[in-house]
Length: 286
Image (cartoon, rainbow, N blue to C red; front, side, top):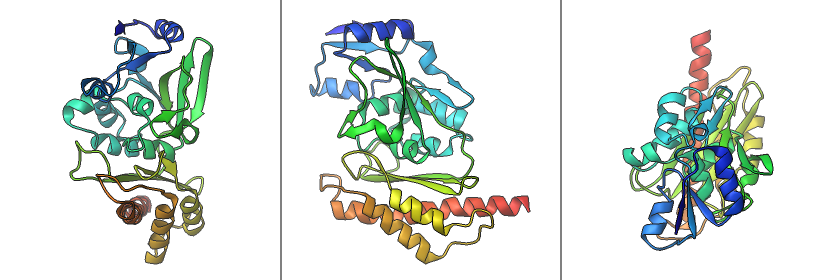
């Protein structure tokens, strides 16, 4: 196995163009597990840890693919609360120090913790090659189980997200709060200024996916200009529509029926938390 260690992004793109079989590695929290268990034996590894550009974020927000979860939590928690919540549930402190959103996207596992947040928050994935740069909406990025829309010569460079202008929430079901693969997960983002909602499920379909029908229903029921407590019937219908958006399977972590039930419960609860945050904000400004 060849080990390639570029110093710059330009060098990395050149190497990826000449060695499309090279597997990118940053934190290594997924790749090294696959190597250790002999589930994968690539011809080359492309180490991205020395590329400074990938480890930076800028106002806007453009978050480099190599920014680890711990920095998202510490440095971007107020601007990207949903992503910070999801990041807190990833692995152990050691894994959060090494793992990256770029790596989560590269693995494209349906159970990846950050995927529902990226979908619900309208994230855009910046990918690059020697041929140029492409901007891929998160909704178009996932194409199958552990498959994404990257071309063989492309690398994930950054994730673009607008700073949150409304409440965001994330929740997942697992045997504990972290160091566990999600049985299922859910994220919601409220956009009061635009009068719309983002909602997405994880670990409950071949790919992470948005719950479009649930989003449309909730946007039609919520009064963002004069918010008031939600009817329980609205929460329940929202939960059912979220559950309906999933197409889970039975596996060792949980049954399809349990996943659909859990998603409905998580959707109701996270909606309640997000809407209460909005109500509290309105009262504080009154």
